[in-house]
Length: 348
Image (cartoon, rainbow, N blue to C red; front, top):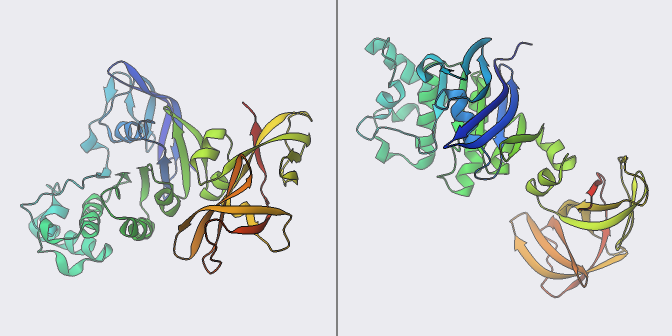
């Protein structure tokens, strides 16, 4: 399948500093892709380059097989057939919802604009709100209006720049799933940048984890969590604790917690020093377990509680269990290790 969007070894600089370096990416029609990374990693710069707001110092960007950016040339954003949803929504307070949605549809008659506005309001489940003004809407409703405006042009690609950052946690989670559903229903290709892994997991078919201007791993949420390819990805995705150990065979590590055998083999020679990643779901409360942990912290999360457990004088582990298991700080519990997906990296 020919890629709808292709970035080939692009480099972007700001004030003489390289922000994005040798980055390549292809997005097929209908894909929902997320760029995930910490602040300052270059993800928004990549989005701006795709939109046409950021020139390239090296490489090229192709959209529908056409070169739209390369050093010395940048096709204007309005000629790219790309919809944008900005972090602050960029809605006009003096216009009602319908007029906001139709802003920029200069080649349409008033009647056509009205039909498009009604169609888009139905898509984002706001059919009765076309005459309202922006200050009369909640943050979630404003986000839907911004998405409706981006879709009104029937773009080939929609770019979303930290679209949920101004919303509370519960609203972010709900809207993440709603936005994914809307884009899928409209068969629209989308790229979202975010620093929040939960948003990326909810929206993206695939996720590219970025750091220092490069994509370190592109994969599904499941594989990023269970099969990280680098120490940075392992540390950035999810939670966990690294435990020092010695590789005694290609799939077995000896640690202070005992000998742990996993489901994957490593090419390192036996005797290599490694860091073994233990996720909260690898630590299971078990009355018959061979480890003892003392509860030092607990974070109630509704259906689950995240416990911090001291198992050695200088080692604490995390465990996430259903909240009907209610243990207090200072209480000792029995544990066992269940690292079905063993993840280890060479020790620094």
